[in-house]
Image (cartoon, rainbow, N blue to C red; front, top):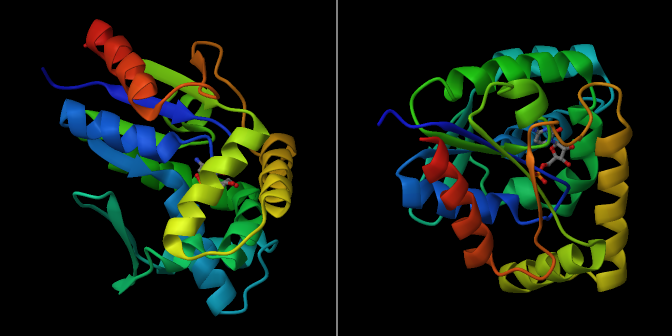
Length: 222
Ligand code: C5P
């Protein structure tokens, strides 16, 4: 059993990373959070006052920084050039700028290259927006996961409460809808369900139910 590739895509705050982590742990696979990579680049760009719409400057930045994802019991540690930015990449500032950097075509090309190298090992669960369509088009299992905007905002609200972030439900609904719009309407590999992906609406499902469904599909494909 050498393991398969599992691609999980879907809109913002659909629970992809929570589900992907559980699935990876249960299968003994590597979990790769590609959103964290775009967030790390955005964090660095903001720190260095680089325009988040400047594809060339961002690409040069991405070429010279080292983004490192280290899996842990609770999830992962994200480092850029050795600095732990696990918490910092979840800030409001990074969240509201990340879709701009992620829309830049050369940035995406380089990210996809890096992500393919990371997935190159054995069993892998990778989550993002373009994994099934662009990064791992031959993945044995593709999932497209979504939930209503209200449900996603509620989940994000609960998560924020734990982390001490104060943002209203109305504001969260708008944040999520804006990010969905930017990710879906961009020219370079927009968020889109792959034709061979399994669609899961998680609105009224528990985390366990979704993870179990994915693992069942994975077992059938091993
Ligand atoms: O998954 P997460 O919400 O952390 O992703 C942050 C942003 O990174 C997304 O809103 C999207 O703009 C971008 N992204 C992307 N392609 C991926 C993963 C994330 O464009 N594969």
